[in-house]
Image (cartoon, rainbow, N blue to C red; front, side, top):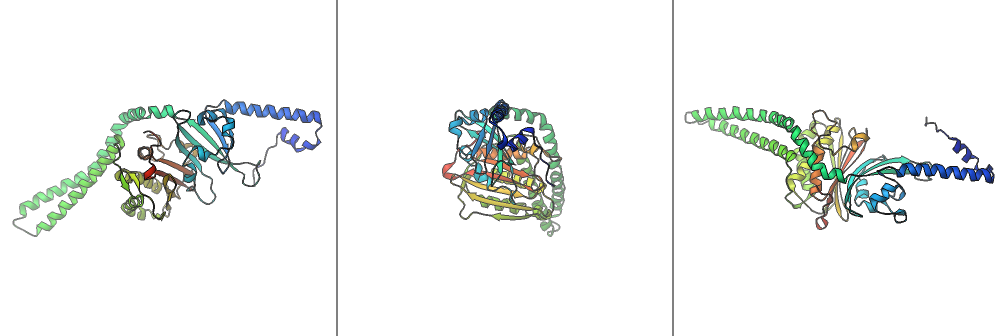
Length: 392
């Protein structure tokens, strides 16, 4: 049963508008003007920018803070589209959830006019009864986070210092098992070496033990490197990269876990996808983190859909899962350091993803709907149009 609508006294008056005389009609117009003025005053006192846009991105309403943030007055903003003011937003939304679902969108982008600033965008869909045809609209909240970004590195360093012992304890635990394995096999090597002259057949067993040691050493090296990446980022080493080659490498590495979780993967690749300039190892770290989050969000039998697309200025890679989705209250805090909703999670994964994407001149966006799934969009600049979108 559809929810019951509540009609105000003003609604009832509007319902018999054609029966009003000139005096009552004048009173009604004045009342409407007062109520409109009240709502205008409320919205204009907000520090956050508020926009209402159509499905085509046309800006239908903007409060004073939105004008200030965007740097355009009412006349200049009239007829503008959000897609023009925030390049890259519309193409990434084309990879949003299917089946008619309206996504909640979180973005960060940089404005250079009238002065450089970082703005966080939060877009929520709603339906309006005041428009015919497609009644969908989006409420867009714009927040100036420039000051927060300016102190983020210092804040992260302080938080790293306070949590370093916790992280170190986790790393020590991870190192324990391979170290024990190394110790056992090295003892076996020592014993077999003593008997090598007496029994040549032990050479084969000795080779196997050495191979085990090499594997464990590689595992240790990977654990240490991941730990160091979380604590002390390093500048990317750029080279020409075929995006799908790295995706294929990561999927092959994770094939066993995907099969254990009964997750199917399909890739919708754009033919002749242009190369990008990227650090291969850092790119793999981004894909591992995004893939891990998607796998942990899905039950056995889930589906992961990867899609690539090339735009005029950017290359897009989208990871869509059929997981539990993300609550709206958690969506805004996704990229905050140490914020996590997973038991035992460190809260560093998406922060590292965002940092690496910024260092590559790109950005990351997340659209999600609870109990439907999540789409993570990675946007990379084309090789010939590479620019830094946000300062790290």
